[in-house]
Length: 161
Image 1: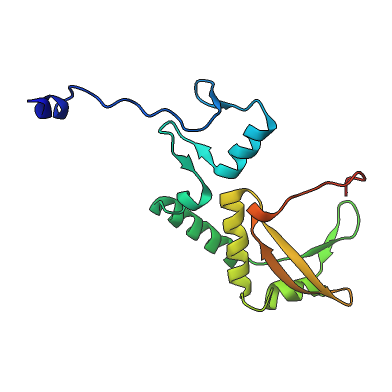
Image 2 (image 1 turned 135 degrees about the horizontal axis):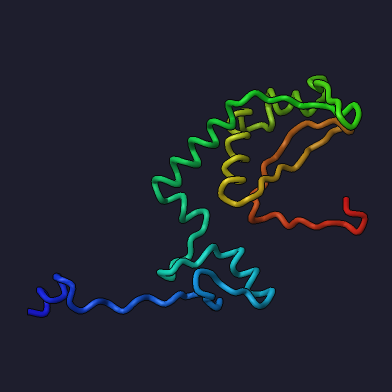
């Protein structure tokens, strides 16, 4: 009989408690230390069920995967325009720059321009930032190497550069 009482709304299983060490503030989490902030940023968001949601685990959900694929693909097909600032209000076409050629023809040895732009847009959607390392030879841009956002540490210098 316990089976039927459980089946029709009798006993309910105990609710899972969040596994993270953050304090729940009724609708959110309170982060009180730098270590908790780093843990939250590195491990994903803890849901009410206690499961951490990371960009990688989110991509296992068909709807998230489809959205990222469609948005990244759409952005990759948009026309690419590089502008040079002439003065405060005026911009002119800068298609004569080496970076335009790299972005338009071959960003690196293993990706087409579309693949490169799709990857950067997916990084932006899932992780909030996208980075590429500029490879130069004799001062001219030769390649753009995509960098994984989780492995990049941004530092700002004292002169705000």
